[in-house]
Length: 457
Ligand code: AMP
Ligand code: MG
Image 1 (cartoon, rainbow, N blue to C red):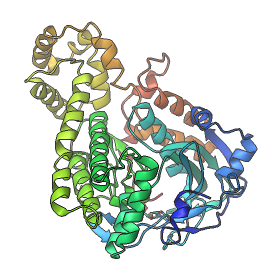
Image 2 (cartoon, protein in one colour):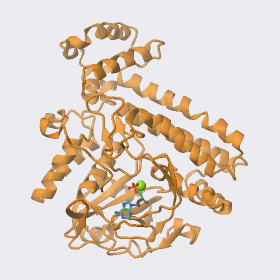
Image 3 (cartoon, rainbow, N blue to C red):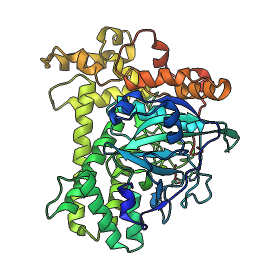
């Protein structure tokens, strides 16, 4: 029985998974597979990955939660199309797309191939970038047809994380006035994931830990140019993991107001809003924990968010610019560079990767006066490791939308999955030079300029 299931019927429901027709393994994360210490044939793995076979006889469950979606409270969501099917080596295994659950509402419980490829690849990309994330073990396709705007192939991703608990789990019980359940859930999270927090202030410490982890996660998003797209509180992990990859996008041409989700008309979740939304979401979590933490204390804890975020972001950005020491003018120097990127519509990732090669950069007239400031700043650095440092934090490979789209087109139209494998390998090691893969570092070609992603998945 799953540990989460032991919390009882208020928290989750036993379900029957609905497998896919003619399932086939498109990709498996072999490194993760090894880390989990599994020994299954691929045939068994496909059966488990589609819910056709139970994992070690574990009954699957779907959990209930609520959440603030685009600023409005939705009192009942839940795992509409995902379920927990097992746990191994302190990790939960979860399927996304294995059929309806009691929380599916109007949904069909399915996930389509296109969005499953995106989730699968982005999980690997985030891991490669050293950003806290849920992981993905398998990607399985099928002959099951799923209706969205068109008929599409049904697919399942198996996710792996120490816990899939979201802020919304706490919000559900708090909104119903079920304070005993809020406490039970908080005790569960502490007991299983923060066992070092056992003292008399453990709930305060828990909130502090979530605040810090969330701040670090979002600072890392900002530094690496990741936009989540749907930062609803039901998509916020209590462990500070990036979770629920939908209409996400990486910054390409640098625009801080970048909105990756075509359905986000107001830009609530635009790139530069993410740090503020993180705090807004944490404030909703603190409210949900108000039966355990007094309001004044909660307020103090929330005040730790911004300094933590700024500290982490500044440290990451300094590393991205090859600066090992902290100087007063660094912030300004970095911002001036970003402003040049914005003004001249430069690619964020490539511009930063290119910064290691000063000779190359000096051929671009837009940067000449900034470059002399940077040159001067570098004279104050003693490190001879500048290029190595920068190349270990400025990626060559990110999951550009057009690259994901090419992999999706190949999979959908030709039933070929080679590009998924190539992208998975490059994104898992995004800092490597790998010769022969320059194509994968290119900016979006003309055909991809109008690409948009929405919540449809
Ligand atoms: P999301 O916007 O993907 O975070 O989903 C919000 C909620 O809707 C979550 O509780 C999902 O489990 C649920 N959901 C999304 N898509 C489906 C679907 N096709 N079938 C059932 N539930 C879904
Ligand atoms: Mg979600």
